[in-house]
Image 1 (cartoon, rainbow, N blue to C red):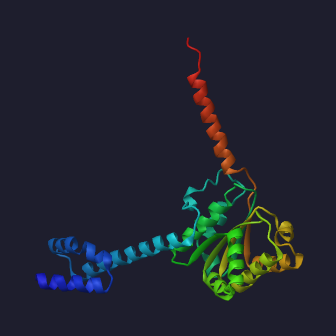
Image 2 (cartoon, one colour):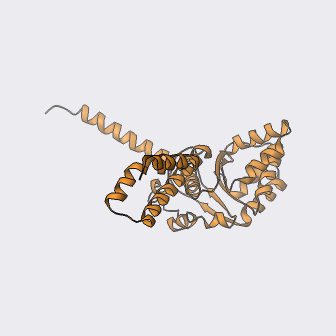
Image 3 (spheres, rainbow, N blue to C red):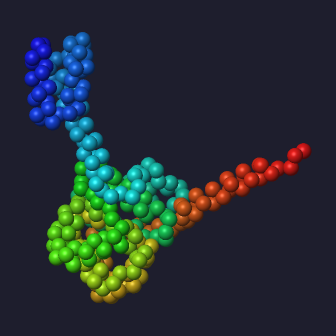
Length: 264
């Protein structure tokens, strides 16, 4: 194979944006000649490596733009600490069938029990399937919707948020919402209803959502659309943060006891 031909291959790979193939080309051609690989084997390897590289880059880009507050997957979740959670149910959700069916998920429970971790972990799975995914805190969401409304850009903002295949709205109910915020939240939910999926987390039971949205009629309309096609997971357990704090205090006390043991 002439050097002129190699240069032309490199130029074509650059034009086709086949970055990974451009990197591995020289070493792989040497191996192909040495192992006497046929053209089909060469093409199979090159295209497989290029496709894997593109999928990896797409996933990494999705993670960077998703707004995830953490990068913890389901493999990092301690199901033994939260026995109220059915791991089989979470594994089923991780198949992303709920996403293909436009269904929602709601995680309910007190602070620190792993709601955000599970929501984010499922978001990471969705991102790995190359589904557009975005995480946002509920208070930040309402502030952004209000700002868009005052700037006469609300339709554009709702259009952007309405297109995500998976939207994660975290911490509903941690801060109060006025009637305008509730109305804007309803508009977003109505836009996404039965089209795309949303994951919600909240420290409030559904009977308390009237208090969150400051109006019973709006709260009922929101819940009606969220729960129509929805999996609800109610987590009842201790806080991970309290657990870690207790373990830290035990370790600290152990160190103190060790340092100040009486000399025999």
